Image (cartoon, rainbow, N blue to C red; front, top):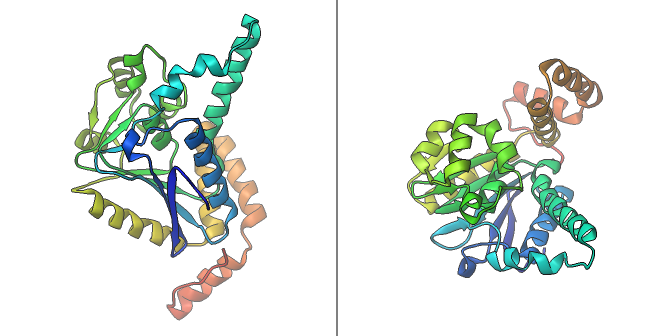
Amino acid sequence: MNLKYFKFSVENNVAHLAINRPEKANSLHKEAWEELREALRMCDKTPEVRVVILSGNGDKIFCAGIDLTMLMSTQDLVQDDCEGRKREKFLHFLLDFQDILNTFEKISKPVLSAIHGGCIGGGLDIVCATDMRYCTADAYFCVKEIDLGMVADLGTLQRLPKLISEGLTRELAYTGRKLLATEAEKCGLVNQVFDNKETMLAEVTKIATLIASKSPLSIRGTKRNLLFARDHSVTESLEYMANWNAAMFYSSDLMAAFQASITKETPKFKN
């Protein structure tokens, strides 16, 4: 992919997508947000990509969220001499940005966040929408919107209570305080904390490579069913699961895994 604000590479069926605006604390302006959505969609459409790792270039900040210059220019983007139409434009503007974050869940491939340093505002919106989160010892997470006189509106308030306790979510959202790496691991926001960025990327790549070695069809089905179960009752989720397996169970991946269990060889799956 020809990307301007991200670096992209693929190795062993694992795509590595890195935010590449370190001079702007990896904050994202409108063009970068749109490029992020397109990059995720291309990963989903590319059969060779089975897993995606999202990280941030630079030494100090994973992502500082929305570029403040874009935030300040919002009124210009929705300008209209009719107040009702102005509000309507802002609604569509906001829904479009929510859709960018929703893309992490819409795509069928798992996305693993590798977070170093600050994960602030929109950065937290991003990682809450990914499948798993890993971070360095110097990482911290912050619902910064409250300090800007705003209500976080891209998904943190909706997704974070599904990942940690509601009480802690409210504390972070009301105070804007930093959630440090050790506390993030303790409360379950991140799976694991690593000493430094290099070690984290190496270990997260190992995890992603292991996922990529599994049946891609089964991984895609597992992601879809986990997301469905998050938002539905157990009864509804079991019915969804039954319908899914009724459609997908008898695959070549099942036969390949079964054969490998007999021969003790590593199974090879179609993308």
